[in-house]
Length: 508
Image (cartoon, rainbow, N blue to C red; front, side, top):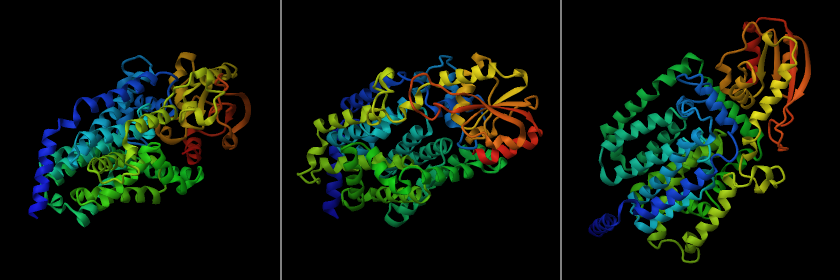
């Protein structure tokens, strides 16, 4: 016990001698990541989900069928600048991932890491494909990992200092996370179970922890009230995502491999596994062992729930940090310790940046092979152009004043909502995702211009349904919108009070 106590004091002295988060080098890494994100933020256009967040921001509410209100609120605030700019919209995402680089270094510091460990942890986070890609979009999948990382830093700092004020701030961060996505609830359930099993059990005896829980409950109460008042549509959304994951490539079998690859090739893949192993086994990291079991538990929860792989990406930072601390301490085997060297980090950046960010010129995107395209890049192309396709069809309808617009999917509805007013289009409706609670077509809309490949769902409610056009992004890029059909449905046979609920049954 004396030897262990002396070792703890020695690590404290070493830590005190190291400038906080290694100051300039870590900030330089964070700044470099921010510079790359800023340089590529406006190269293409909005991603489909970003257009939806802008649409949701124009219908501000305490909740939505598919999410809490935080991201639509941020989209509304950024849109208030009036620039109609993907770069401006993405500023919160860029700031979140840049801050996460620094927080990852701070977590390494709390785990006992010095300058080298902090640099390794920060650099690994910065070249993660998931985090680089997340910094390119304003999305829940960007802000949620940032808030998890901030919360984990507060917890690791509490383990070292026992400063209970940190737990109160943890309640604030948890409340913000719950207003972004409800996933942080899974973290707390698993983390508290891990604390009971592996310590530090005195965390549960701290009144500040439970006061923090009250703060979080107060902050999330409005969106929970909204969910309850609207029949808990988020549960339906969860079921829909589970079905999408099952229908997608690989299903559950691809969850872990995709998650590990998204941590970064090659260094993130190795350090995320090594960090988990050392958190579970290392005596040096014993006070933080609950984080290793929490990572496993969170992985199991989202895997069993058939969630998306990136739901668990919020645990990357502590795993990177734990691996970095053990590498610095010389615990890693000599035959692979070279992985945490600058040439490998540069290689990881060379691999990650083209995969995660729009480096290719837009003009060459159509001819580029799939492996050379950034993730989801094709879905940033052609939104104004496909809206013009709808406008051309709309100008050809016999009764424009009596014709509404319905899109089968929320991305196309969001694009029409954003670019349509300048082209004289009415506000669209959609039975898909969060749009289900947005305004339906007005009763004056006897006819409907329908955007979607399958118009058979309209046949029972209109006297005639015919194809009148297709969407064209005019870039020759194959994406979900290219070639989608436009239909004109005329002669509605019932009131919207009757028809709309039946359409929403299939659209979610």
